[in-house]
Structures are given as C-alpha cells and as structure tokens.
Image (tube, rainbow, N blue to C red; front, side, top):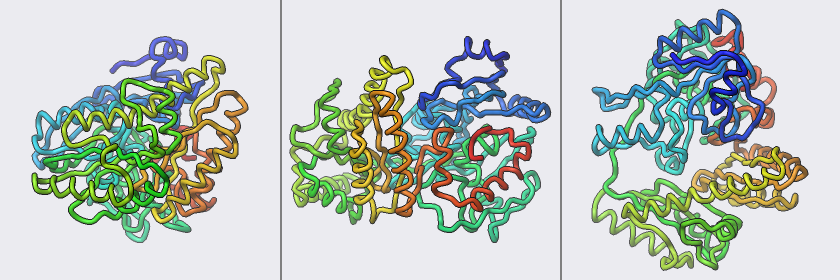
Amino acid sequence: MRSVTGRKNVTEMCADLLQDESNLSGAWCETAVWPENTDEAREFIKDCSRRGIPLTVSGGLTGITGGALPEGGSVISASALKDIRLLDNGNIAAGAGVTIEELNSYISANADGFFYPPDTTEETASVGGTIATNASGADSFLYGATRKWVEGLQIVLPGGKLLSIKRGMHVFENRTCTHPLLGTIHLPALRREQPPKNAAGYYNRSNMDLIDLFIGSEGTLGFIAEAELKLAPEPLYVIDLAVFPENPDSFWELYGSLLHAPEPLRIRALEIMDDRCMDFLRSHPGELPLPPTDALFCLLLRAEADSDEHLEETLVTLDDMLVSSNSSPETAWGGFEPSERKRIKDFRHALPEAVNHCIAESRRKYPSIHKFGSDGAVELPRFEEYFARVTSILEKRGLPFVIFGHAGQGHIHANAMPEDPQQMFLAEEAMREIAAAAVEMGGTVSAEHGLGKLKLDYLKLMYGEDEIRGMEAIRRVIDPDHLMGSGLKS
C-alpha cells in the first residue's frame, strides 16, 4: 500500500490529493494512503480509529463541493482499488477506484448489448465517488440516479469492520433497522418527504433498504471499497438533439410537450441552456460551431429506439413537435450517428469548460476568485417559476451568470462568475438565496452534487433542528467517535 506521511511531504509529493473541482484552498493532512485491496483499507481505518485520527475519504477528486478535501488527520484514497469483473448474475463488481470511463470500457468489451445507465458528466469520476454522492447525469430523466443501479456494497466501517450488504437483505420497518454490525438505527421523522431528486442529508424513506442509507452519505458513514452494479439492455438507437427555439414561448411550449411526451417517444434526457449560455458561447468560441444567431434558448434532448420502425416513428414525432411549437427542425443539431451524437456531447460540455476558462482568467488578477454554482431542484409544476426566480436573484446583483441543467427533473445549475472580490460576496449571497427559494418551493438545496464543505450550512435551510439531530444520531451509531468525513454532515 502506498503511503505518504508528514504534512510537508503530502503537500510536496501528492498535492493533487489536496485539490478538487471545488477550487477550495487550504486542504492539508498528515498522512495519505492508497490501499490496493479491502484488507489494506481495513487495517488502516482500524489504526486511525484506535488512535483517534480523523479520516477523509477521497476518490476521483471530481467533486465540486469540497467533500474530499481534508482538514488535517489522514486521507484514504480509493483510486487504487481497480478490480472489476463480470458476475454470474450479469451484474458488474467494481472497485471504488474504477472510473466511469474504465467501467464503460470494460462493459463494452465484456458485456455486449448492455450498458451502465448513470451517465455522469465527468467520466473520470470514480465508482465510489458516484455512490457516495448518489451522482446522476443527463440520462437520469429516464434511468434515475446511481442509487437505482447499486445492488451491493462492500463498506469498511469506522473501526475497520467490513460490512457486506446486498439490496433486499435489511430494510427499515417503522423507521427502524437492526443489523448485527451496526446496531439499531432509527430514521428521524421528517416534516415533509425528501424530494424525488435529492442529495442533501441522509436518504430517508419509509420502509427503505439499509443499503440506501450509505448511498449519498458522502464518506461520513464508511469507506466504500467495492460495489455490485446492475446493467441495462442497450437500445438499438440513441438520438441526441440540440434544439434552438427563437423565443421563450416556443421553448416552454416545446419543453412541456416533451416532458409529457407519449409513445413512441422514449426520452432519456431533457436539459436546458438559457439565453445567457447562448451569448456566452458566442463570445467564447471554441472548435464547435456557434449556436444559431437568433437562438435564445437551447433544449438538449436524448431519446432511444428499439427498432428501425421505432426510430422512424421517433424522428417523425420529434419533427412534428418542433413544428407545432414554432421551433424550426432546420436549425436543430444532431441525430443518431456517432459523429452527430459526439457533436452534441461536446457542445454540452463546452459550456462548463468555457465557464471554467473565464474563472481562470479572473483568478489571474484575483487569486481568491472561484465559480459559484447552485444545485437546487423543485417539483416540475413549479420549474418555470423557479427558473424565473433564480434569474431574478442573479440579475438584481449584477452578476455575470449562466443557467443550465436538468430541466426534465426541475433541476438547474446557475453558475455565477464573479470578476472581483465584491462580486464574490454577492455570488455567495445569491447562492444562499437560490437554495432558500428551492426549499420554499418544496424542493432541495442539492439535487446531485451533495453538500460537501461548501454547502454544509444549507442543510439548516431544508431541515429543522430535530431532523438534523436525528441524522447526527444515525452517524453516532455507526461512527461514535465522529472520525469519518470530519467536517461533513455535522
């Protein structure tokens, strides 16, 4: 097992372990280790527990909320846990350090006709990290988030014990579950049910499976070492389109039609880019063609078809829907050929890349500058209202911003791009107001990124003191010394 000891040595020899996509600074630790198997992980965690050393779990370091960044103590990285194999039941067993790109490559070579549906945007994200945050991507409109595809977990608990858990083995009855390794766990009563797409606070549903408590727990209840993942049959065709309505009415009409699309449409993804995104891409041109001059919005959609006939019906139906909403099919991009699908994927990724480039330019003048991003979601009937409210919150502060995200799930990311220290303050203020607005409208402060360190305080916007105490009580049962994920969900 590779290990580095001493704060100075960690900083000099593995500085990448102290940085992630959140751009938070100041992370440090005394020891970092990279176990190559579960036994090594168990021994290290057991030793940390015995010595009372706080432990931070690290993975692919693609998180944007700072959850994997240590504040002292030790770091255990899952990045060397690369075992992957096809199981007799058709599922995949993958070490926590396997990246989504590596997982997809293995499936393509060894499980012909199947795929892993959670389509996280960042392919270098690790399996363990996506489970720890219950990550989701564009295709979660149809296929759901990571949780739906996790059948089993190997978790090293605080103290070094190994928990092997399968879906269906242990469930909460009357909000209580007793397990021989964990003891008795009580779910706190909630004032209202958690929204369907939610990554804020421990998962809490009546009669839920015990495995779901660990999915989305952000490294605070144990170290995920390995996962058993389900696969889905791969459709014959996948169609990607970028549609550019020329006015807001056309956009919202088309959006509503697609949201409730009947057969034959089988829509996997439904995403939005607002007018500022279009202007921003035009002013930061890359290698891709620019959006049409008159485009005020972009609606990105992905659909699938199981046969040639189904494909033809899907394309005809989509064409009719565009025409009926006054969105010209002639200006739409995409199709079902690999090159066309790649074009849409690259276009989708070009926006956050351009935002990051813009932030990097501002940071040259003000090193403390970083991007601010919202992660709220509301129920679909209130999405248009939420979109308008988020826009207003940012406009009234005069901040540069763009809005994009998973419109099919009422979930958007508003990215504020401060250009000086004063705008940093305004952006932080705006993000909190956006989070509060989502809660006020019955939604969540975090739909897919988790809370990490950046948004931990948002938990109090969404839950009452008694609910938070109930979550803390769950943590005390599993980690009585509060050593795992120090600083998170506390």
